[in-house]
Image (cartoon, rainbow, N blue to C red):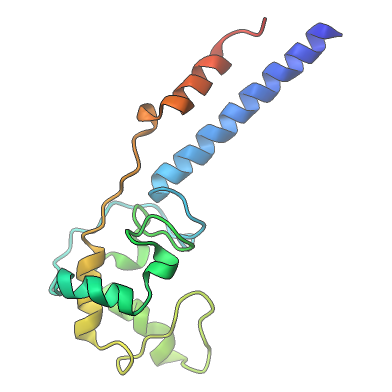
Length: 161
């Protein structure tokens, strides 16, 4: 009976470690978690040209309350985008994304992202916000550099007593 319980505990321990690895890998790929990302595939930070002013963009990022959903550095909040750049691939794609719901179907209100018509957020301001967003970098450590995770993995790899 005692061996069955220990075997069960080992199996549970390994399952927990596997779950932690998958979750942590997902968080690392997403750039530190959050609940968002919009289901867009993980991809590297964009390298396309930027024409806006990141200093002005920072002020606008706060004025338009972008931080409320995307966090102060794009890594936290309900809609994480650092590490999951999706609609931020280029300045033009970003602006098209902002306008898409406002210009194509303004009567259908967005439930996750505000509608930003040109009259609400002019292209110049949108480009400034985009320039500021492009300054964001991931601060997530590589999985190998997370001591607690590595301790759990080491402990789980040892045979049960």
